[in-house]
Amino acid sequence: MKYSVSRTIAILRINGDRWRALATGIDRELLMRPPAPGEWSALQCLGHATDTEAAVFAARVRALKAGDAVLSSYDPDAESTPITAGTDPVALAQRHAALRAETLAVLATVTKSDLDRTARHAELGPVTLRQLLNEWVAHDLMHLVQAERAVMQAFIPGSGPWRGYFADHDVDAATADPP
Image (tube, rainbow, N blue to C red; front, side, top):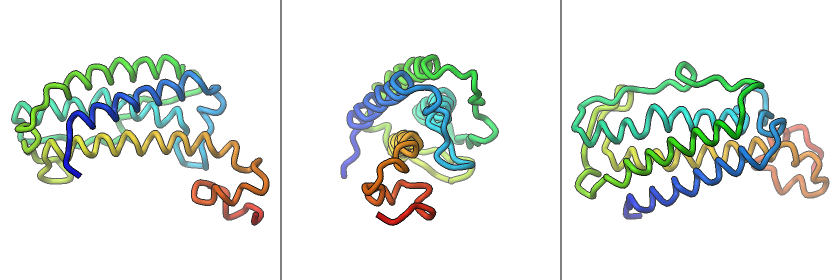
């Protein structure tokens, strides 16, 4: 597939709407529910997406466009904003939306000739702007799927004879009764 900045912008714009819909349309209990011990809840996924929107992706695009030679690594475990029982999902979604609008504006400045700009990532070695933009879209989609999978867990056990249809997503499948 040929890479397109406009496609990246379109997907990230849609994903921003999806994050907002999750945070504003689902109750707090469901948003805070992890799918399994040690896994992120939907709200934690949104928190991570917001953190990376603020500190990682747009900053790296700017760095590559400016010709910076090195991109620092990012450790989500050490650099994340804590999600607590007091975290307001709507406020977090609004913060994400504001940051996403800023980063979409940065992406609108990327030209075809910028895509082959390179830098050295502290952990991964040489990377191009094109690779970073592909990773950004995949990362955002992955965490949306992860958030939706977390929400899904509350409903799978009660789906009766249809439960088997969700085997690929059912974190409790090993202990579930066969369909």
